[in-house]
Image (cartoon, helix red, strand yellow):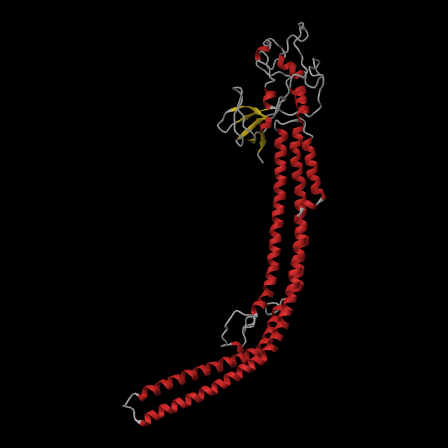
Amino acid sequence: MSGSYDDSVGVEVSSDSFWEVGNYKRTVKRIDDGHRLCNDLMNCIHERARIEKVYAQQLTEWAKRWKQLVEKGPQYGTVERAWCAFMSEAEKVSELHLEVKGSLMNEDFEKIKNWQKEAFHKQMMGGFKETKEAEDGFRKAQKPWAKKLKEVEAAKKAYHAACKEEKLAISRETNSKADPALNPEQLKKLQDKVERSKQDVLKTKEKYEKSLKELDNATPQYMENMEQVFEQCQQFEEKRLRFFREVLLEVQKHLDLSNVASYKNIYRELEQNIKTADAVEDLRWFRANQGPGMSMNWPQFEEWSADLNRTLSRREKKKASDGVTLTGINQTGDQVSQPNKHSSSYEKNQSYPTDWSDEESNNPFSSTDANGDTNPFDEDTPPAMEVRVRALYDYEGQEQDELSFKAGDELTKMENEDEQGWCKGRLDNGQVGLYPANYVEPIQ
């Protein structure tokens, strides 16, 4: 933007009015501000799009983590499915927020960028063509009037100086009349000075009034020319304001998910999933699968078998029966079909007391023979690779061979999960023992 032209130098600005010399520059500056505001709006939308992306990622991570925790945790049945419905909701909402991010950047951001490029044209020497045109228009409209205003200011200054000199001359003449030391010649000089001062006052006053009249005559044309340039600036600014309003409405539509049909369906489906939770059904399932409704191989008389030459322990009978339909009394009369959930405390308690085991010292199929060699029928089990894991829940060991830890503690898994859902591990203090496999997760 160019500086003030010479005709405005020395002109005293008496107010903040638009009509004062040079005060049109605020209107010119508004053009540059319009370009900067386009950048500000693009930055605003870009930051909001980044927030939408981060929020979508956080929703996805949250859903993944809690889905695993709920599935591995003790919750079961229809309430478990209702709980997991929140994770499904988060995943779907995450996708919608990613779509919002895409709309903000690919549509709104690009639209502002293109409009800015079309509305503002950069010059080789810097600045914008639109700014220079407005500056030149106002300068041209104001230059004749500013020149006359400068003349008025000069005439006023001369008139006021003449008035001051006249007053001083009169004061000197008056004081000299009371001074007997002055001769007539000196008094005559003072009187002539007063007369010349009065004549100067009349001349400067006439010139001042004349220049002021000329300024008044030039004012209507000055106002008309300034209004014309100002109106052109107003039209340019109106285009920007209307464009901003249009863009902001489009941004609002992209952000307002309440009017998106798929968004409404997400929460309608979530509500339905929660309402399907049935406490009676879950209790019936738990009774049939984890409670008194379970089948049982009740103890029966067993003849000694010469072929086997030994009696299986009660624990081994349980392992041998895995995968075989057990016969027994079903006290509930119905078996609810639902996926089995791991329950550490429940399954751990299914181990039978050691006093049920029979004497096996003479069993030829025991794990070691009389010479201490390994049983040739035992399968070679390769040692499990040690893995660092983190506790998901607090656990207090119920037996001497069990570990105790708090949620967030880290330990080392030494052996893989057994058939009853237990793992062998080692705490950082060196203690080795068992713990529920579904109470930990691998450290990534």
